Every structure is written in structure tokens, then in C-alpha cells.
Image (tube, rainbow over all chains, first blue to last red; front, top):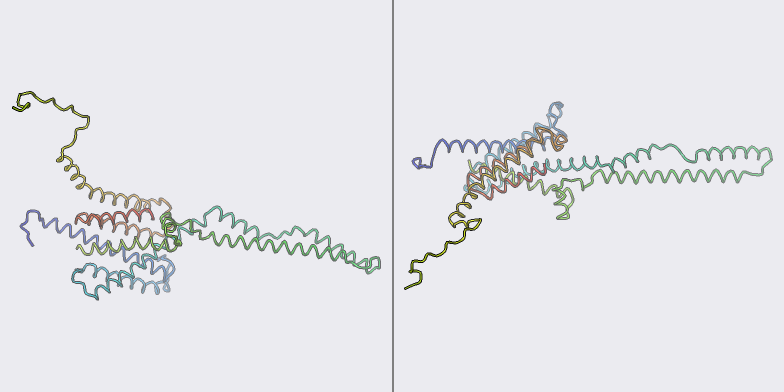
Length: 253
Length: 112
């Protein structure tokens, strides 16, 4: 090393080295936190550490361990001289980076999904449909209840008169009662159909893809992809650049 | 004998409102722009990170409270790593890489 060069200052060089080492450490820590957040969240269904019992920790610890090993592998491999890379090193980097990218993408997609779902559920149209569903399913009033009661009374009176020999039969009363029963049945069927249609509309609106982030919508509309594919593409882009930055910082120390 | 050798002085050009810069001056301005461009790029990346990633999480802006705190922190750290990589690339004179990292910080901040 030529320390006699006028532009070289060992103190500055050491300061730069320390700064870059710190940046690389932050990158490694970030990669570990991102992977762990997704993997542990997947294994334990949430990351509320304070509420965890033995059962949750039993599943979480292997997840944390796997992420720790994978991130340590990345740190070691990224800090290595890339010119001396062997096929094994390249494969190892591929495995470590692949694991990291997949877990980090999962986190980004979950964020997109949560944002889209919560916006859909807060939509005024969706709220109105849910309110209609509630009123439709809880409706117990039948508009023909009074008519039914009247028809039943008239039939009873008619049968009484048949027994007394005043009337020959009650064909008219029976027909009237049957007609009212048919109307009640058809009204009930129409209400059920309406409730079912509302439920189907509400189900479709629970995940309205127009409520994705504008960037996701831009990709979705530009390429004609579904929301989930567009969300994957956006997360992939961000995470690949993050991994590249991580690798770049490692290469410079 | 040439007419100019008679001693007559040619009329001076009328000065314009905006003097035409000499080629040397133009080069200096361009060099200055090139010199400050990396600093501007780095400043832009740090500003975006601070304004659109760090501040919203610290002060619950733009509805970030709807998301998990750990998730928000990981994206702040992701942005920080990209900004650090952008600044480091500038010191290595890797301008394209620096610009790419700064651009991704912008995309991340917008998406966040």
C-alpha cells in the first residue's frame, strides 16, 4: 500500500471503511428482520411476542434460527471477493439470496393485500350492501300474515258450516288459503335470492382490486395482470434492488 | 495598402442584454453542475427517506398505523440501506448505481 501518496489519508480511509462496515451491518440486520418477520409470522400466525406462550415459541424459534443461518450465509458470501467465486459459492449465494428474496417479497405482498382489503371493507358501497344484507336476513315480517290469518279463519268457519250441513264443501276457502300460501312462499324465495345476490356482491367487493395502491394499479393496467401478480412484480423489484444494495455494500468493504 | 491599415478604428459591437458566455465559462458551469449533481442526488435520497418513510412512522401519518410496527420498521430499514448504498456508490463514482438506488428509494417511499 502506498502510504506516501499525498492524497492518501489513513484516518479518512479507516473512517470510510468503518462507515461502510456499519452500512453493511445495517443491511444484514434489515435482511434478517424482514425474513424473520415473514417466516415467523407465517409459522406462528402473528408477531405479538408478548402474547406468545410455549407453543408459539416452539414454532417461532426454528423460524428465527433458519433466518439467522440464511442471513449469516448472505453476510459471509457477500463480503467475499467475487472474483474468487467458485460454482459452490455462486450456488450458495443463489440459495441464500433466493430464500431472502422470497420471504421479503411475501412481506411486501401482505402489506399490499392488507391495504387493498381494508380499503375495500371501508368502501361506502360495501357498507351499504352489508347493511342491506343484515336487514334482508333479519326480516321476519311477512306482508301476507294478516291475509293468511283471515283465510285460515274463513276456512275454519266454512268447515264448521259443512259439518252443520249449511255448506256442501269449502273449495273456495281452501283455494284462497292455498293462493296466500303460494304468495308467501314466492315472497320468501325472492327474499332468499336477494340475500344471496347481496352476499355474492359483498363477497366480490371484499377484495376490490381497484383498491390496490396506485403503483400496483399502474402495473396491473399496463400489463393486464391481476392485482396479486402486479403486487408480486412491484415487491420483487424493490426487494431485488435491496438485495443488490446489500451485495454492493458487502463487496466494497 | 489594405484599407484597415489607414488607422481607422472599427466601430465597437453594441453590447447585448445577455453577454454570450465564452466556451471556457460554459465548461465551468457544466463542470460545476456535474460536481454538485452527486450531492444533489444523495441529498434527494436522504430527503425522500426522511420525509416519506421515517416521519410518517414516527408521527403516524398517511395511515401507516394500520400496519404492524415491525413491518413499518423493516421498510424504514430497507429505505435506509438503499440510501446508504446510493451515497456509497457516489463516493465510488458509480453514478448509475447511485441513481438507481435513489430511484428505488423514491418508489419504496411512494408505495409505503
